[in-house]
Length: 65
View 1 (spheres, rainbow, N blue to C red):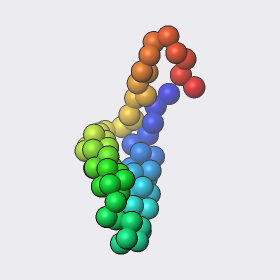
View 2 (cartoon, one colour):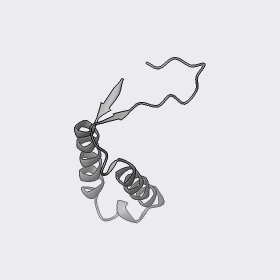
View 3 (spheres, rainbow, N blue to C red):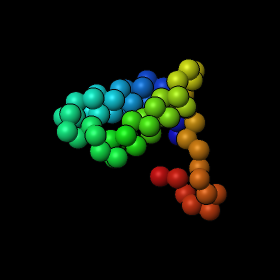
């Protein structure tokens, strides 16, 4: 099972829009800063990938759903 690049870019875009829409009071919290860092890391990982992104299994003894 693969995740298409377009779907991942759409999801990351929706998350970016949600984070940017937060009120100014909420932007000063630790959770908001961590969320921006995590989103930046995900965008860096998935940026520039061609075609489909493979779904990698974390454990070989656990089935993938």
